[in-house]
Amino acid sequence: MLVLFAITCLLSTPALAQIQPFSDQYILNLYQMNPAVAGTERYAPLTFNTRQQWIGFGGAPTTQSVTYHTRLRAKGMYYTNRGFRNKGKNSFGKIGLGGGFFNYSYGSVSQTGIHLDYAYHVSLNTGRLAFGLAPSIFQYRLNKFGGLVFANPNEPLLSDSSYTGSLFYIDFNAGMHYYSDQCYAGISVIQLTGSQVKFGDYVFPDEENPYRNPDLSSSVYAYAGYYFDINREIRIEPMALIKYHPDNGFRFDLNATFHYKNVFLAGAGYQWKEEFTAFAGVRLDNFAIQYLFEIPTTKNLYRFTSHMIQITFNLGQPIE
Image 1: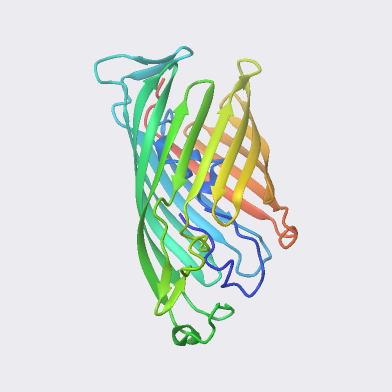
Image 2 (image 1 turned 135 degrees about the vertical axis):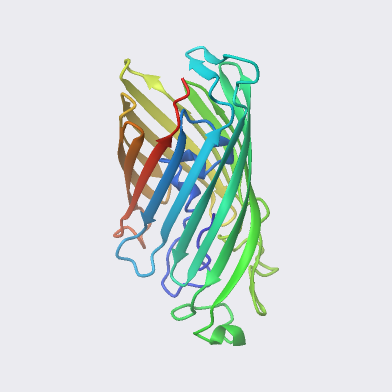
């Protein structure tokens, strides 16, 4: 799960970085941000997501992803307002499994990879606490060098505009997630290890700037949300998130979602120093479609909007 290689030393057109584009899609798919979410849904969701950022901006980021997660031994478990109950021996569904495919491209840089997620769930008061770990492997590619400006333009390898290079990385995501019928909260770390990008003698980041690569640096997220029941059909869900990245420091997000009969949702949010968001979705039986619209607030990008469409197939039987 990666972001922009080109922010500090690659792009000829100045822009501000967005960190971790897939984990930033948490508003519609929290599983993208925390592997501990695997197995927390009533169904086994298979989700397809596509996002076009900064429409009208040359070489703007595009992302595509497919995710799936489920819970083992979930058939014998049910849920009441007082918490989770066990209908039989070993029927709590303590193990959540999942995985996903992702592709991200920005200008001449692209990343493609997969992640496999494992989560272990334990009962805690009226809810459950899950611990998740997800190894990931991805390919980091430079497709061409035309239009890019490097810190060392005399580097022989980089002077060849037809050069195409690729690197493979293995990393890990980890997290904790608490959830009940009324609230949820969690913390996650995306890309635990961090790495350098090295093509020939060109290394980024270098020893003097070891944290200047926004693609491969770790990001930390902490979040909490609550469900306010207005009546039997309407729920309001406020959510707050704090994120930290070595390049951008601390940021926060505030979101609010309106739910109607578990069929329709709509909401809005603000990401500090990044963007405003608005989203809506509808669920028809086991099929759901959602749309998100973003308006950047940075002065270099405020004219360019972003769009995201997400389609979900809720597979299997519901966990009642």
